[in-house]
Image (cartoon, rainbow, N blue to C red; front, side, top):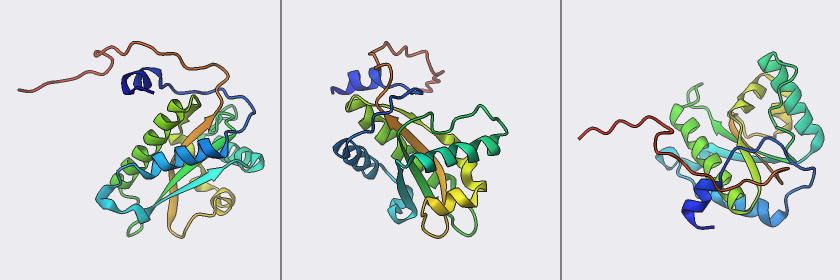
Length: 176
């Protein structure tokens, strides 16, 4: 897809069909994630975990509901695939630069999903599972890694349409 059309078509999708994405689509999305910039080039401090197991997706939702104290909350948005991006702690803390790096990884994957005609949405709410040892164990994270961002992806119930993007959408201050 041409870049400007891709940007005008990208949107946050919150309703998916039950149909799973293909292995080829998943591979293209993960490749886009691997192409993202990472702070200080520390790619070894980032881990992507693909979750397509329905029971684990339900457990993630249950843990997020508990974390947010909201029984109506859905972290996974019902998507058949969630790609969790985790980062390594350094000296007992998670670096803000590594969280930003995880955001870059998710954004690259979000754009790749759009280019493939799939729906997707950034899930910052995945951090709510950090209080669930059961979820953390089942995500098979390397030692010292914590989920900080994720991408829900699948076939959208309603396709995204190209839209106008006004330059006034985000306040911009130009200093000359």
